[in-house]
Length: 101
Image (cartoon, rainbow, N blue to C red; front, side, top):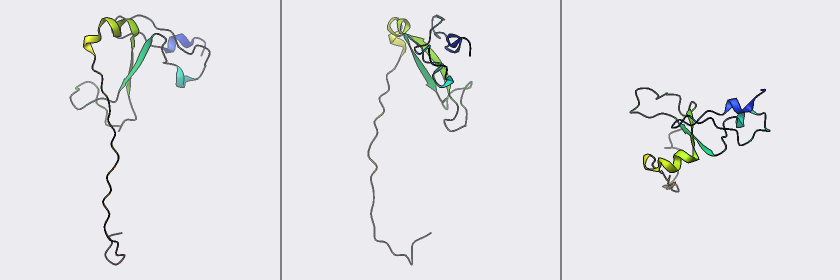
């Protein structure tokens, strides 16, 4: 990898070429960590007729949005807060003779 900057894609809104936030790392794991931008990913969704892989989250569409566009175009974005709940457990008596193995 001679030029790590080429591994960082441009902003999908304004097409500004972005630079790596970690230019000294030569590991492809960090190749699309943009400086002054956010990396976004989507595993697709049911409504898309273009990108909805059935790989169970193993394949993602990755794109970047620069900080300037995040501010200028803030009305385009939705913030999603995931709320994780503790699982509820149901306990009942155990009988090895009737348990379905």
